[in-house]
Image (cartoon, rainbow, N blue to C red; front, side, top):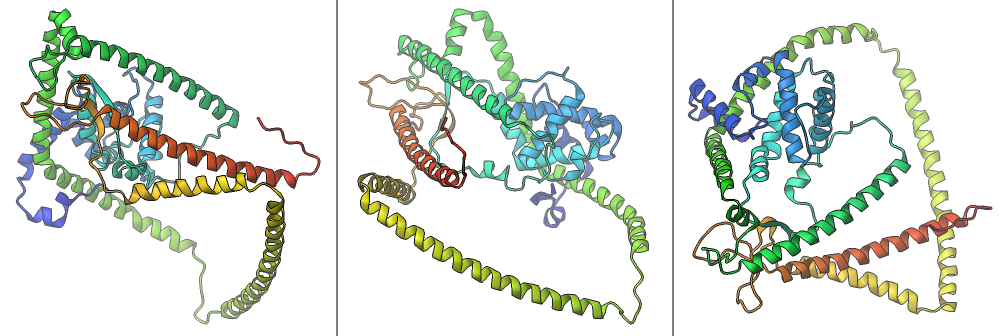
Length: 457
């Protein structure tokens, strides 16, 4: 399940630094983790041996890591059953399909090896370390999230849902609670949008007033962090400490990438141990299954009854085919009459509304087709730094990540806004079309309800 290319047979055939490289790989992995969710090398060894002493530590580790990935607030004082429930839900959402983990007790008394497998799966499947480093990095510039990708999900997001297991939370939720939750989310979304607009206004003021003051001519203005350092110079020590800690994490991450194959080869030994323990339990299970099987004589007395059942099934299938053929004929004639009546109604009604609907549907399909056939551009996705440019400047409003003499690849805010407006218009047309189809469907259902009055909301 967590086997990876470096741990294959070809990888084992290559030069492996033996057990001496394993402590280095595990140490680099531990140092590359966030400070508040850091592994202990001894915990990995205990988890390999499935020691219960390492179970609670691994539950807390996964809870802290997944909380950071999903952007939620967390505390080490949270109840252990709450942490375990969240980890199971988050792993289920990510697509972790090993049922043994979801059967672990909620008190954290056992299952450290299963948690080690889940942790290694996250390392490989969702690039856990890369996401944590990106989320926890020190931001000295003013950044914003930009996405100019296609409507389809990215490959990484597809991978989180393509193998989602069938089991999940067993609690049934009332529809009224979902409606209340939807209203609450809409209200919070509007509040967040208003706060974001206010933040943009303040950022524009800072960039405008400090324009031309930065040593980097590509940027040309200060960020909020730089302005805070100018006003409160004593805060630079804390910023330097954060940058030094981040540098140590990045160095550990580079060391981990070099020694990563050693870790996956070690994980293969974990899987081998689990396979050996499973094989030891199989003979007992097989003995139980064999003892429960009915005894069958050599002359096969059930052959005659089986032939009779096959003949009866064949007759039932023939009868079912005839019934289906009759049903299709009846439905076809009913649809022909319905289409003929609809055609007569259209001749009596005004064609303008019908033609307008058809034109909107055709325009939507043509727009989608033109977007698919258009040459692919370099789409911007992720966090980018805001760089202010005046109207008289030749360059666009772009994004820069480092001090350099050459301008960084940039995209103008006008271009992003235009892209978002086109996507919004396309989604609005599609939403309107879907609402109209739902309304027609509801009208058809309401026609078949006698004595029922339907009032639209």
